[in-house]
Image (tube, rainbow, N blue to C red):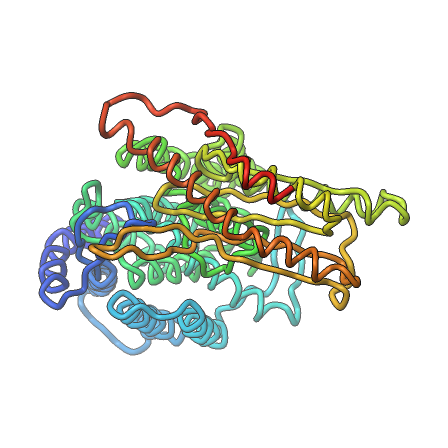
Length: 523
């Protein structure tokens, strides 16, 4: 009875409160403006939806507790316990950090520092993972309990935040996550307040979805997505079996989509040499939106969350812990095998593992001569081989140790990464390295500006003539830039063709011939 009351109270409160918050956000200029690079909306949208969600959830919790206790409040109630006061205070703190970021844009490291402090306060108050249990095997964390707990909260906080890039996506995932955690907590016999809080959060998000579904009129913003992520991260730590403090597989299975998106982003950026704070259109919501459209994206996400959540709930109800990871693995396998999401990241990781294994199998005297090449169209079908193949020819003739190209054009949904390198690179002290940015011209109003879209990196072994060889490359960097701009022009022409003529975009664009002077200079 209390759970239904909490859910519908939060839902009703959110339906009433969200329009008020939306109006206030627009009035104070707290809006998300569109850009040409990675955002999917075309007009300014109100932020601060997380404030309405938190207020609705908190009101529901207080009303449910009051209803349960016949409106008699005292300081001995669980709501006033240390761990709940810390959690609610941390949620307010993360909301403030998010609102500041939404309004004035904090640096990535500034946000991360604030998140670390908030997570450490929660863990320091007593919410920590003592042991981890999977398939009946219990692993004590010992001295690693605190850092693992902080890392878990950081992952959850940022996982929902990274998903919040398409109308209703993070909200839909949050509904399934909070609802599933509520059911698992109820089955495990956890404290009723944890169950009530989870159902209240679920109800508040359902009410918010009325305004956040495509086309959205308000977003959660960083404030809301981080608050929801932090809250479900703590609830996941609390939703273990009541007779143990072990962290089981069920919470991981419930959170599989946001955690997979975060892990894929880290792998994609680290293995291509980009900053982990770099922005791109390689997130799950970008690829799903491109393939299925806005409404289709929510349907796919809802179906995936249903499978993973059902596996987690069934594993808890039937006491079959293998069902939870089975559901999560099934969801991930479908995404990767259909190349819907995660396929490029898996190829990047497989290529790095293959190179690492080869370094153990190749005999020492051929390590410098044997080369490993890997090229990957991570997004889009641009003819980047027209730039890459002459580079390899140049590297072979000049006996370079490594050549790398990385391109990321978010506004065109184009991302390309390729490497050509020796199995064993020279020692860092003996490396001569040249990095040049790849630039293209873009119109910004009446002005034309040079926009960086990636870089090329060349490594040579330091010898008496290494500087001369690298100098030859720098002399022809201008021709390389022209070739890059030619490829970008062809991609833009192909992308614009359906809008002008209504024709279907070809799957493999026709490659223009390589200018003879560029090929001759690079060779």
